[in-house]
Length: 353
Image (cartoon, rainbow, N blue to C red; front, side, top):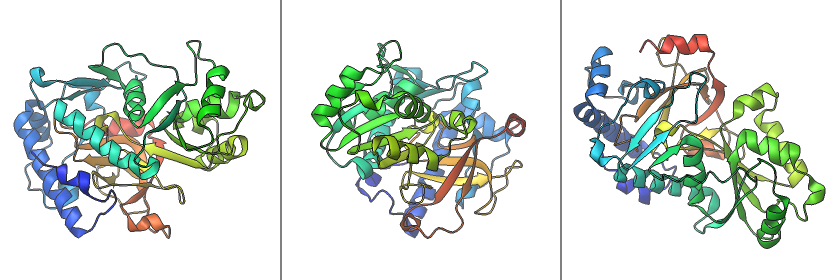
């Protein structure tokens, strides 16, 4: 199995030729490890007729993300399961199940800590969560929503949940939080659709004593609702700035199948950027690589999944690797755009894998 401990002491976006070679070498080892440890994964790759040596990153075999909804995939015995993550739900009612041992869970937190350090710094900040308290009683099982809330809560303190049990804004708690912490940096987390609904649409500024100008907002997911409302990322940020004077807004992209190796958005150009823990490829409906600047299905690769074969996944999202970018983030990892979920007819073609 690969050893990624050295990455925790490496610059987050320092991706040169040596780093690319390191990633390729270890993702290849990880593929071999899962083939040896997971009979179901090995069977899938045999069905796909995968038998070639991994020489280039595009040689790494991938499996569709929806397989985690249909098959129990893990590379550890049941006795080593430390936590089980599940997706929040789908239109079919099927849930993805991700099985973690303690080592995998710890590495997820370490990677997320390194990524979050880049926007929050080393100190835990007072944290406002734009949601209800999930109050998970069984800490060995998390759905995607609870996992995200508790995962990001590790980087905050004085956690305050904006919504009460009736899903209404608790102005008393909010004013106490802003009054106590609003004059310095504080951390705000929420899902994109919740941020729009409660901070942009429903929040009554007249009931607030102070604004959010010192806040650092991290949000992700829920863009389907925004697309339906014809709210793009630029408009979303403009509304937050206009209403709350909130300037530091970071969108993130990631899957529960690769928890920990999220992608942060560059504040200047709005593109997502890869890190030392992950990589991205774009494929067409026939699974062929497309050129940079062309749209296709997003394939995500991560060095973190060791307890389950989730290190190379073909998602149901449509994206594009940016061909040319004059932004300073072009000196970092790959820059890419996510356009949203593919149409069902397109996804159906991928289910044949």
